[in-house]
Length: 65
Image (cartoon, rainbow, N blue to C red):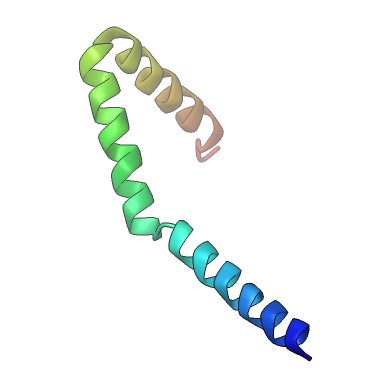
């Protein structure tokens, strides 16, 4: 009987740990934007080419005709 209680407590502790480890989407978005901003400051040429490439592909795939 004691092992059942211990197993239940361990399962609850693991669930709580997982909830704490998972960041909210708002925090993740903020971190990604911050990383991309810093990367663009360090590598402006590559960042500009990447933006042009993404814009070209989106424009090509989303054209209305």
